[in-house]
Image (cartoon, rainbow, N blue to C red; front, side, top):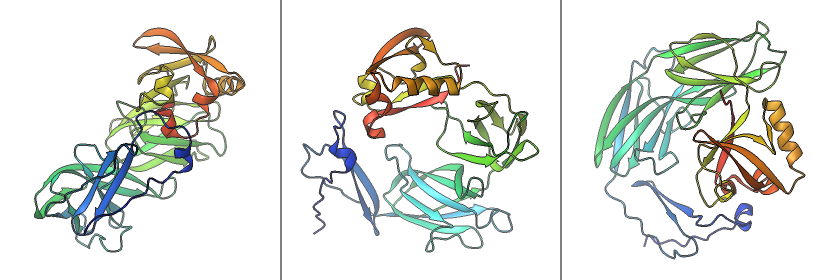
Length: 329
């Protein structure tokens, strides 16, 4: 009759104390009608109803696919346009034996609930193993029944980075930057060559962060493509932690931290560089409480936190957000 019982499984993370107001997510996937999901309070919710409409199908054609050097390297993801669902509705392409692109660059995706979506073209790359990066996003409105869209392959660029102080075996990370966070969701890693260069191919237009963690020139810099296709690495020092709070009831929010806070030091000592930051963080583990030096909206302040709980949590969900190593410059 379409009814299912679903147990609230207690994973290792869930047996630990959970942040206040934490919620579960349930997903329903139908081969005929598509995908839906909803959040619910496991303590208060006993029944959920999902209603599906007549499904949509989407035929996608990649313009210029036949004869291009990207044949066999492209795939697709489809996301909800409102951004509420954090996961792909569907992924199709070179990894899906039933939905592979044909020789003309065509495939049919679905089924989906009718509505607003974002079609994401993804390029597989050999950099850092078998990585994949989004290279084009196209908004689509899907009505019930058959739909069709043609998308072109965007311009892709090569990035050459020259290092003046790189040691043997050192590597570099390149990732798409974001206005909200320094990493925009994906990154590639490559070992620096004996000539002191690292070359990344087939990158889409946009803002990028170049990060090198070890060695004499550890740090980061930001560039844009296609404007800066060949650069010499001039890093800014990694000397701060940028806070992002996704759940105010998590450990970060409960400690008094807010999104955008910049942690610049501990117990009266400012971070000088990445190695110095790591040394101070390690030294603080033996303390019950630590005073964090914070810059918030241009104003300096201090926040006292329980060291072990904040810097050694049981899970990221308990943190209610995260902290990212960044430069203050």
